[in-house]
Length: 298
Image (cartoon, rainbow, N blue to C red; front, side, top):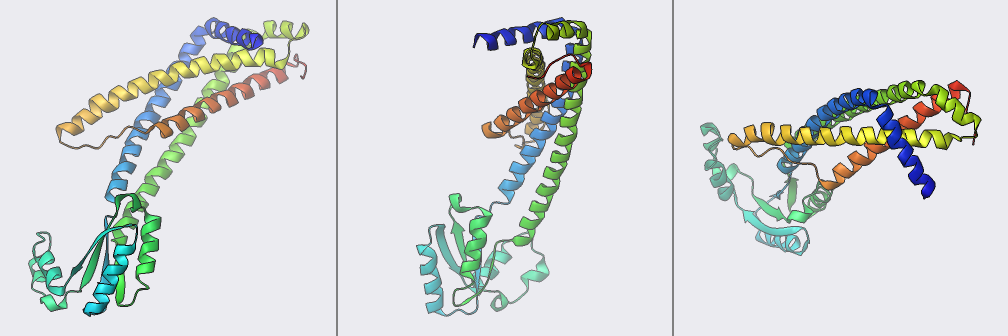
């Protein structure tokens, strides 16, 4: 524990001694993370928005005929299912009235005779069961019942939303990869530059028996300090921009769109960022030591 605290202290000293180079690196990393945070928040909000739109609240069961016994049997079956909140039968006339009251339907469609409209049962799904896996399984089971012609949950627009979400998420993954490489490059080159300034000191430490860990660990801690400052600055700035500029503008238009990422998302983001910094700090410092040819293996 004492040795660990000593290495942390050396990391803080190394950070202070390279403050000018670190400031440049902090500004660069903060700018890149700021871009990622803002775009990430907007994409997270967009995903949440499409998730809300894609929520399936009910399923329609179209019937082969209007046999009362068949309708009763299907309604009784639906009542026994855990995921069904309620179920209601609609005759051809009921379906026609629903269409007629819909202002978005053109007048020509409203002239179709009521008897040509399909009869159906509309089943409302409980909120905790409104995931696609359950609904598709429910859809498949209901279509096996006697008297059921087909079921509908609005598959076309669900697929459309899924495609949009996939494209947005794919873009964000590509962006994250490039930004991660940019941050890794900054950390890698900053450490090499800092170590080059103390090349003589590093060689002296190796001659008196210093191990790789004794030299590399303080450098990693120094990089973590730099990364932490950059991360906090970028989070603060992105919060101000998203909440006081973008969100405020949208709220003035009565649009509630921006949604802050949840705790799990932020935790994964922080862990990924820390691991990235540690990984490339180690690679950079270890590469420098190997090239200098002055440190003995542990």
